[in-house]
Length: 495
Ligand code: BES
Ligand code: MN
Ligand code: ZN
Image 1 (spheres, helix red, strand yellow):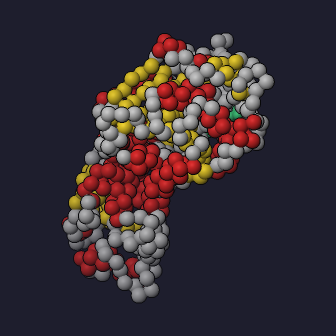
Image 2: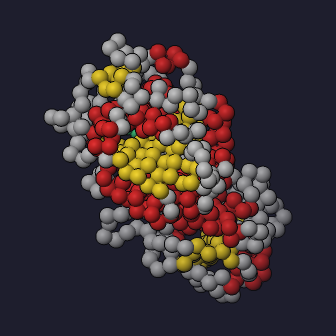
């Protein structure tokens, strides 16, 4: 779906839904533009609503007016944005996605979004325009992929109305970001009967061709040659052979990749012989969200033509119990030569990432970010909406933290003291793949640290925010596309 940008009086905008954001009206009852212009054209209809106390501008308050005389649009959906100046990108996103989700319930509907001047300290007007485009893309796509009657429909036409300078570029950028998030969401939302290592690799290859990324797929023979014994052990119990996808964006000319993005792509995590319960397993089609987030971000980085070299890697396996499964007590040798004692086959994500991180280091990456639905412990620590960040380098950790802030996504740094590393020492091998119960998100990160050498590295545990268990007015359940925008902002920071 393309999104266009336009300016001009709101009364002339032709769309089935015209979504207009407005700030809280002050005690004087004076309206800010664009509401004041609309009010004039509509013979005072808006100020009468204000006078009646129906329109206060409270955040996410909404008011639908249909068939308004004097208005070219079929419906006017007024969306409150709260106190002017206090708006944040997260609040704006909530309000706008609520509106676009509401408008996209029927097919063949067109939508336009207009925003007031924000005067916010935390979000610029061009960022807001960009966010409107994101909302148009993301809000009209749902998780009802397999329903006879889908719950949401792409808009037949989508427009952002703005006279802010640079709004055409901002709309284009938001549109690219929204589409990248939707690619991530779709891959997460599809079942494991469809998305397994080979089909994920095919999809990545197709996406790469479409946006001009170099793409290489390593099959099981190549993975053996590359000594990825840790990753291959996890795949052993599945009829689906493993794959590693390597994507390259060469925007920075000659030279080493400034950044490698590594994603955990466990296309289904049954737990293996350390089998999960039904409750624990039912959402485990989402365990490739790290890889899907990497892929979404790489397509956006390519489409935006960022002047920096970035590589993206996905470690793709299915974790299943079988006569051929890897077992407790097995000792694996990872690509970098370290040996790992397996004491829980459900701590498989770190085994996959170990080899792919080491491979990224060998490809010469100057900085690393990995993303993984790695631990339930991280969800216990930070809840369902905050990404845990873990790092071996304060500067790089802060850079990724500010990228998240800029992208309007929530991330929080966790401690990485050596005492946590001591908890995964093994009596028979260099390390074991699981520590004691407490601090489980951190011992998992300390495990990964063994495979990044001295490269500045940030691990993002997205077990909570990458997958939502229910629908909310402001976001669909299922894959969320979280951290796609943070990755793009982090890459931009290196450009
Ligand atoms: N994929 C899971 C983590 C997960 C849990 C993701 C909930 C999303 C939602 C991971 O492979 C796993 O099973 N982790 C174990 C680690 C434990 C065995 C040390 C966990 O969190 O219980
Ligand atoms: Mn697991
Ligand atoms: Zn897992």
